[in-house]
Amino acid sequence: MHNVVFVLGPPGSGKGTICAKIQENLGYVHLSAGDLLRAERQREGSEFGALIEQHIRNGSIVPVEITCALLENAMNNSGDAKGFLVDGFPRNEDNLQGWNKQMTGKALIQFVLFLSCPVPICIQRCLNRGQGRTDDNEESLKKRVETYNHQTFPIIEHFEKNGLVREVKSERSVEEIYADVVEVFNQTAKV
Ligand SMILES: Nc1ncnc2c1ncn2[C@@H]1O[C@H](COP(=O)(O)OP(=O)(O)OP(=O)(O)O)[C@@H](O)[C@H]1O
Ligand SMILES: Nc1ccn([C@@H]2O[C@H](COP(=O)(O)O)[C@@H](O)[C@H]2O)c(=O)n1
Ligand SMILES: [Mg+2]
Picture: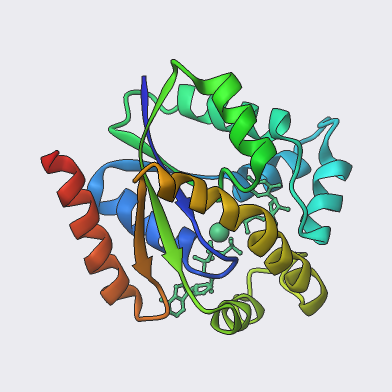
């Protein structure tokens, strides 16, 4: 049974940055759904490359069958991990239903780490990111934010109703955010 922490928040809220620090210090393995999709997009012979690129540029969500398979393979190939930080998933109802269908009995959701951050700050962070992403531009970001507001935030609200959400305000410095994140993990370990 894989222990899983979903990491959600608007684009540019710092999910990847904070997950990297958690992986470095707390023994969890970081799996970014976006990174896995970008790798699949580039994979020689992938039948999904063009579809993935279209969704990424459009800020829309790839069918869960593709994303969830990539996540499950990555977890199964990660050896005996303490747990997995599933970054940027589930991002919509299709993701959530697909996860429940494919991963029930295989994964236990410990909690949802929600990095909340004002959208204008998020947008500037993405525009300044400098990683050459095809979706770090005004047009794609507008769509990504719309996807987050209309499709992803309702998923956070769903988990909130089940008492699983741990919100950390993420407009602050990485150090301040990470200090609060460590406390969240410490509290979970005590339960
Ligand atoms: N607390 C912070 N303060 C200032 N800059 C930050 C902070 N956290 C992350 N950044 C920077 O903002 C950019 C986006 O961070 P990151 O890639 O971690 O966000 P993300 O939530 O994973 O975004 P996406 O959903 O687009 O993948 C990066 O350039 C990162 O260095
Ligand atoms: N569950 C997901 C996660 C991501 N995507 C696509 O990847 C893009 C980038 O995601 P980041 O987390 O790296 O920002 C995202 O905008 C989607 O197009 C997805 O389809 N499903
Ligand atoms: Mg990211």
